[in-house]
Length: 400
Image (cartoon, rainbow, N blue to C red; front, top):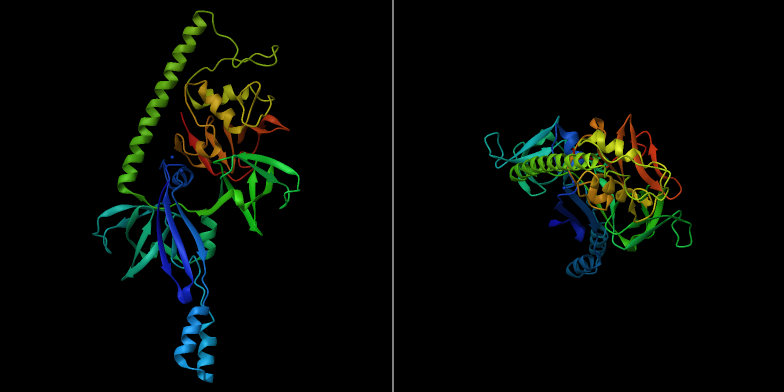
């Protein structure tokens, strides 16, 4: 991930660090048809942290320069009252129907450098008339102030997403904030979990088994926002999406031809070497999202196995999605976070069968009728769940 940082000093040595970063995640980037698609498809982000430093040195220096009189004592007391600047003071959120252009100069004649979409974030660097100079992602330019809401902490929190990146090989998630608490579930390294709460060295996160606690020693927490997309990045993204669509269509055609050839030679058989010989599985047929959904549904009732990829003998959530798509000639990563960056993004309200639905630390396949099929937990195995938004949907990705 490429990162660039801007740090500004605040009053009395209080500082706020704003780190703007971009990712091809969420792949988190594809504009389908409107802002909802971009939000589900992009994981460019603004990460916000705050830090403070002691004012004792400043106060001591002032006292020494003013002497020991009562006036100096009052001055020291006054200066010891630090004015805390909110980490949200310089953050502005776009409030527009779709997007607002970022221009090279403070005026409508300025060259368009990029786009800031609705509910996306930027850092305000200064003002020029009724325009703000902003920085967002890899774009720096000007936006008319009327399209931005500046310094509104509640709005910023509502559009941002606090996440915890897992940095240990296998993260234990516990029912309470204690190493003695019951083990709720495990999450592999590299996953990105939604943060519910942070306190006393522990982080409450959301996983498929429910909400549980992890030690902050094993995760890196940050706040993610959608940020601006440069003109060059938009062109590159659209080109990549078109190439991915064509490649997926070609893979589907080849897979269909191969299956047809196998059937004609009488060599077609059940898929995956089922552990239950009495149960048979139809081979994948077709090359669209509905075909993917139909194929995936056959494996409902089979076991969940942490780290597994077998549709019959056991798979975890990302292993299930990976193996289903592998049957259609599509290679996908074995990671729910990484799956949020494949294909191209669509709005959750426009889901179609075969779409990959991503949650915090979990993933499934949409099969229609507001239902997903997924390898849920060890207790439930591969199953159906409805409604599809039974948990907060982080992204929806379409392959076909």
